Amino acid sequence: MATKDTILNKIQILITNNFDSPEAAYNFFDKDGDGKLKKREIVELLKKAEISGFIRGIVSSKLIEGYDSSGDELIDWEEFKSAVNKIKET
Image 1 (tube, helix red, strand yellow):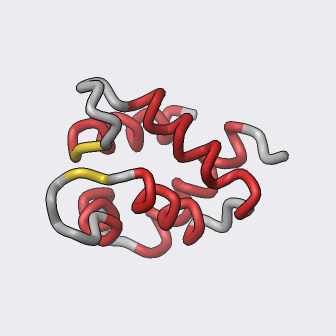
Image 2 (cartoon, rainbow, N blue to C red):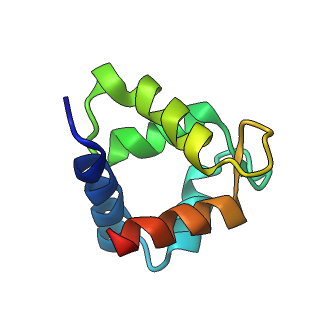
């Protein structure tokens, strides 16, 4: 199974190589444009980051659990930005 660092690294590579900014990545994956990433949208981000289909559901739940500071089980822009900044630190 992929380690946390491997997963975070793949997400960072996806954002860096395919988008002009983290905000552009966020807007791309926010398919319905409501300003919140739902679990299925996070799963799509993980798919694009080449995270194994076997663990995408688990990883998306853990990402929400770890970065959802508002407790609404969604990731808003500020929470996403915080997650990206933490990824950059690793």
